[in-house]
Amino acid sequence: MAAAGQFEYGIEMLLQAIRLAPANLEIHEELREVALQRKAAGGADLGYLEKVKLNKSGADAVESVLKAEKLLAYDPGNTDCIVAALRAARAAELDAVAAWLERMLKRTSE
Image 1 (cartoon, rainbow, N blue to C red):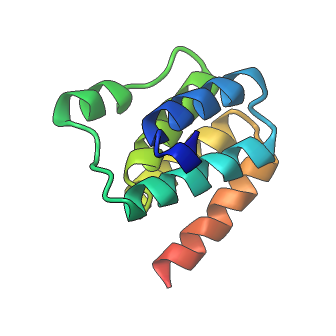
Image 2: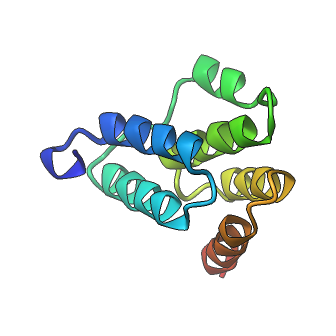
C-alpha cells in the first residue's frame, strides 16, 4: 500500500485493523510508519471540516482512539494530536499503546 504511494488507503486500512484489534501495538506502529512516509512524501494535513468532525468524542473509547490516531496520521509531528491519542488510549485501557504514545511524546518534545 504505502510502497505504491497509496498512503491514504494504507491509513484507512490500518485504522480498520485497529478497530478490530485495538490492543495490537504493531498495527499502531505500522500506522505511524505510513504516516511519517506520507508526510515525507509531501502529504497534506486534513481539511478543516474533517478535523472538526474528528475532534468530537467517539461513540466509545476505541472510536475515540481511532479518531485521535487518524488526526495524528495526517499530522504526525503535532504534539497536540499525540496527547489526544494518548488520552484516548488511556481511556480505552490500551496500556501498551498508551506507553508507546508516551515515549513518542517524549521524543517529539525533546
